[in-house]
Amino acid sequence: MKKLLIGLATLLAVSIPANATKLPDNVQNYITENYPDAIFRFDGIVQLANGNVYLPLIPSKFNTETPVNIKYTIPQGKTLTDLPDAVVLTNDYVLLKLIKNDKGKNTVIGMPAPPVELVTGLFPQDMLVPKNFVVPASMKNIIGNLDVRTEVEQGLVIPVTPPRAAVYKNSLDKIPALKNKMLYIASNLSKNIQVVDPANSYSSYALSRDDVPITIKGYDVFLLVTSYGKKSLDVISLADDKVIKEIDFKTHPDEIVIDNKNKLAYISSGEDACMYVISLETMTIKKQIRLNGMCEKIILSDDGTKLFYNDKQTREIWAIELDNDYLLKEIGRFPNVSKIAYVNGKVYLTSRTKNHLAIVDYETLGLMSENQISEKPVDMITYGDNLFVLGAGNSAIDVIDTDMDQIVKHIELPKNEFPTKFTRIDGTSIVLVTDAKANVYTIFDMDTQEVIKTNQLDIPVNSIYVANKIKKIGEK
Figure 1 (cartoon, one colour):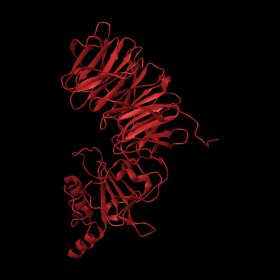
Figure 2 (figure 1 turned 180 degrees about the vertical axis):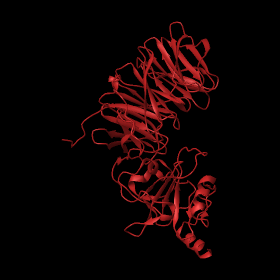
Figure 3 (figure 1 turned 45 degrees about the horizontal axis):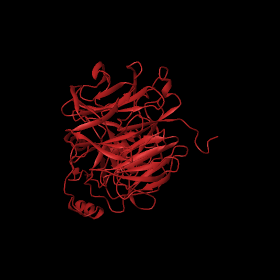
Figure 4 (figure 1 turned 60 degrees about the vertical axis):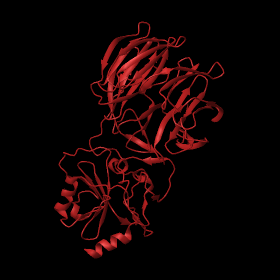
């Protein structure tokens, strides 16, 4: 046993992590049933007594009370004692066998279209990486922040294998706004952008990303993406799924707001206290607007004349008058603002912690009223003279008549667990209500103020863009 430990120490890097990852007790117990002498390292790696090593992939969420057994293996139909290349457990933990590739490097099994559990899990971020270790390009998102090379870079497109369970089809009969569309989804389960046909519950393929997206927004046949740790904006052509341009900034860009009418994009940088104005016709920087404070939660008024933002350091709300030489106007200081909206000359501010909606007269800056609304308000959208407020705490939408500033309707979202964002389909009255917990999105009609239906997904959603389905370059 001592020789085995020495051999493993030689195989692996020597740096010691500050924090330790421990496999759940039920996973350890299942392994020891088959291998009583298995060694569970402080960084999550499993060493079997026969010298084989398994690297764990930690799922984003799992049921600790689920009895642990084998969900499936690769190759199929194996047991743990058969030493398969991959073991997917019933709680979605994955064990990947450390193997050698044809160049003698340490790696794990590679497939052109890995199953969903193998591409949405994550290595322990304190794992001691084996020496000369590489990861197949199709599984690069499991690396996280570890210093690991990928075998081959293959562009943006990554095949995605549908879930092994019965594939659920989403009926679009009642939703003409989703016909001939594609959904581009950023999820907390992956760095990659999932591409979903709304008729299906699963991804058709994914766009490979090196960094976790902050914001994804679309214009025409382009997708604009800002990412954590990256001082540039990626412009992806949806016609050929390629990054056709990187717009560089001095600091990290954050949020994106699109002005379709004037063909402009506004990109915030809280780090640099500024707003960049991008021409969507040339994909170049037109102007840099200096701001007060670290801007976040930016919104554009429906008429395109004003931008609003929250200073996350001081909690002050500011307006930028775009038609008045970019004049800055302070609206006031409000606690824990989760969203800003502007309609009929009034600024609407939600407080997530107080469950309040504050209404401020834009001209006089006087507080007009402060009303109780649904729990944990997280998003708002204006449509005509109505304001729709999304409450995550009780999965509901409050409809505010902005003439009377009163709630005129309360709509429950029974199939949502923690709804977080509205995404409007351009040119329609339809919004998609996406959920950070449940693998669903709800289709809501702002004209009728009714839920049309709820569609399933195989992943929860951080942000989503609805694009027209277009013919790809090179397709016959």
